[in-house]
Image (tube, rainbow, N blue to C red):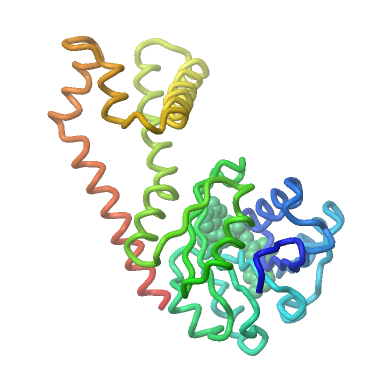
Length: 276
Ligand SMILES: NC(=O)c1ccc[n+]([C@@H]2O[C@H](COP(=O)([O-])OP(=O)(O)OC[C@H]3O[C@@H](n4cnc5c(N)ncnc54)[C@H](OP(=O)(O)O)[C@@H]3O)[C@@H](O)[C@H]2O)c1
């Protein structure tokens, strides 16, 4: 297989939130042409609607989709994936690339069902819906061509990071996917506090989102300045910000966050065991 996307047929099985968002972004960004795309969904109406909208081909069975595709994006819920793969066991040959989006299903489990296929596990976070995701992926075996191909395919949807499966992939998943949820939780605390100080909810929400966006944008535009240095720049000695930061450190906020990350990591390990 070469790393040219333009000569590959890409099939999507499962066209819910994630499958639909990826399909739409890849076509809108012209990463894929409509004639390169096949789709299939359990409830056919969903696929038919998308086929009409994007001028792609909807096929009746997952077997037909796998047979006719070079790259197959598996975007069903994790609980539906293994029975689907069981039925496709003999359809995946060694030149097919299977990309699983399923949370909590490891490559070793996928290998039991479709041992021939070239396996990729991808974990995007929810900002994929606005094409600002962090998208982690890992391969079953080192393969530079496949790594380039996967990076090319997902780059229109955000920042793509290749990792090893295991601790690296789990840490990336907790930091970016669960991380989105953790950040929303923090944003809620921020907003509640501003409102308690008399500001209208809508205004408070805007203050929070702009503060987070502006801070992230500044960090993104100055990668050479560490977060520590940025903090020092914001906080003048014995000033207002310094007083707040002192309290955060005294209350060991870092310890609380680390504990939360580790709990999420443990749950990821449990899920991987349940699905193995
Ligand atoms: N949503 C997220 O933010 C997010 C983030 C990271 C990873 N993921 C992963 O992305 C995957 C998809 O999640 P989602 O949120 O998009 O789920 P979803 O909205 O429920 O979509 C799943 C789709 O798969 C279809 N499906 C189920 N079994 C099928 C089968 N045997 N053959 C063909 N189609 C089948 C469903 O069809 P019906 O119409 O019949 O139900 C549905 O349209 C999951 O593995 C999840 O772990 C999601």
